[in-house]
Length: 493
Image (cartoon, one colour):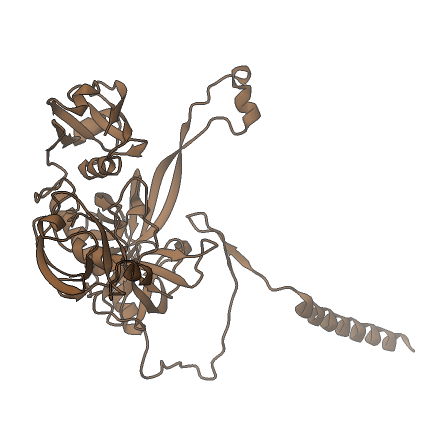
């Protein structure tokens, strides 16, 4: 082989070797995952998925599609970013804690800022936004980012832990809003969209169907309260962390629910999500706007779902409804003639098959409203009118500025200036003392209650709820006086 041939062979060999090397790399190279770390700290593995169309123009098939609903609803969904303080110990391991005197310093907790994220829905053009209570609860700062990337400071108008709904306000005008749909009219099997900001991916739209209505999943249950209302819309639209407070919409682009929770063993979407229905959302945000507090009406009964064993035990032929396990004294139910062992089957002529449905229908009203209750007793069906009462067992409206009396003590919410002076987020103040349990425990006038049995007391509703749960037991009351002096009292309730 001459020199020229040798050089040509070397070039050809190099070229073929390069082709083989490139081909081999393409074959054996593992799939690349791009890891995106959003603001809220979640790490989300993301990989590209491609699809090549035969035509340059893709036409949406005639018939069912979600384009209209997504286009009309998405501009009214906002991204909510929160900042809040969390206490962390100065010492990070037990050995350092043990030798803190040697190391110097103290082990008092220090405040560290943390961040959270969620979604919200603009419900009026002047800046009112509905979201979940757990999205903004305890937040020291709230930032609301609109779909057009404008950013505003958010202010909490009011919250309702019992339904997990909160109302936030921003200083803006002429905002895009979402029409309120009727969640009672949606049907199981109907298509819905979930719109929010999962993992901080802005304005994400997913689709699914309504899987069930009036679902109680126990997520709001607490030993401190017995007034939670769970009547969720269950769907299989994908909802993930960051979607909380976002919109569940029908194909008309109307709001039918506020996305709140998922059922998942991992914390990420696993097939089912849950939304607060707009029937409750509308009522709660109207109360928060008008009174600063939710007007929670109560029938005053202890209830459970009717089932076959209860029917057999009480010789009843009703298998669906709500069994009355007990009736509170002087309650709306007692005054309406409802008794223990009755089975409620309708409220305002709407069928009731479980506790969640009954709670929802009652909660749509306010104290003082009358509702029609249909029930079965000893095989016969009866109907009665019940005048609903509030948690204080009266028909009065309760607001954030209302005062009321419990066991001889006049109690009012703590004013804004006093809260700022003492550095507290909420509380109720005893402004005058008559003879009763409070005075016998040693409490003096002007004492501010901030905790009962380590549960935060932020407003009158928190107080009355905590006292009702503690009835018949001893309670530990924590608080302070206007001069900053902290105090603790034990009372038998």
